[in-house]
Length: 486
Image 1 (tube, helix red, strand yellow):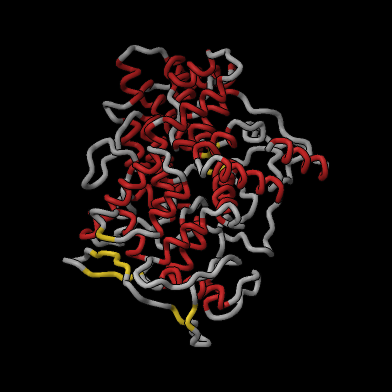
Image 2 (cartoon, rainbow, N blue to C red):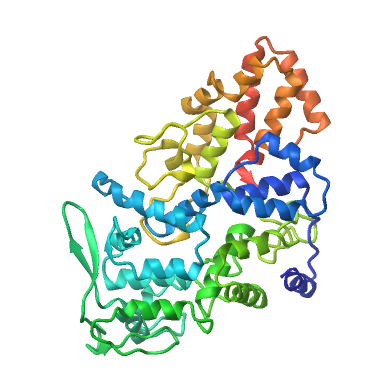
């Protein structure tokens, strides 16, 4: 993988940045893999470890941490529309689906089995939580559009009513793909409960020609309808087929984009022929890795995180400062809303209270989008109305700035009597020890000598020591170094 990236640098005359420091790698890997900051103690232990393979061992530990399942079930909950949409009567279904996602990632369910379980789900949500996907994906058009975008990286909606203008996909292809869902039916139960049932018969007609379409994979085989058979099973078979030109590449690209900040194809759900990958050989290699290792997502993540490419510094050089797609440096990215709120809680030593959930429930563990939180809304959490990655907003805005500067919620966390600062003061820690703890907790690094010298002078010159230290903690939470993963 590193060789394929380096070959592209050589062709373009790009020189990479240096490898990042251990502090940077620990913080970066922790946020990317589990959406969680390393603690001050973890930073100290990692820096004290002198073994040559400590970064690789860190990656293995992170992917085995319990936070991994919470973070990734939250990520996929956004994409799979695990939402109540303001209807509290749907709470049981969203909780069940989130629980299923959590278990799937905790057990490292192979990705092809994960997709099959969702596509072929039937029954009631209590017995088969993935049926909740069909709650908001209720007709053939929605099933085609969402499943192709999520699992194949293709935006097919244009081909609903005419041949795709930017892809080798016709309207017949679209409705042939839709025929896999021809026998899916929604059966209403009590209240807002529903069950997904598969009818013995059923077909899809091409709306323009009226022709009955046989189930047909995109640029793949065509199948006959068989009475009593669920065509979605054949769709799931084709998805995981090594000859499928889309499936393995789509998840490889999506995973690469998460860790590297930029996909080999951007956007990750727009992998059309007229939007080629920046490094086709690398995308092929990553897809092959997925197939050879039986769609083991943790394995793919491990391969990416253990590469030299992933460990490059985010600091640009004169040679690569304009590069955006060849991975000559790590691409900094803002923390997601959930990861940021959890990071604020961790640094301040406070606990957020979410309506209807126990005190201390982490934001990355929230079951759906309907749990009220002004902070999460302001910082761009997904409302889960589409299958697009773009639902999760990382764009800065004035409301975020004002919230970080003036929010009573943040001030209360800093002043929390059970919080980090008060614990350090109660333990009679010196100003230097408290400030060093802030740096380790928020930035994942020790302060530079000049930083510590200036900070100590400011605290010493303040009339109110506690207020001065609270101001420093507030400053850390507003710093770009805290708000970004770099």
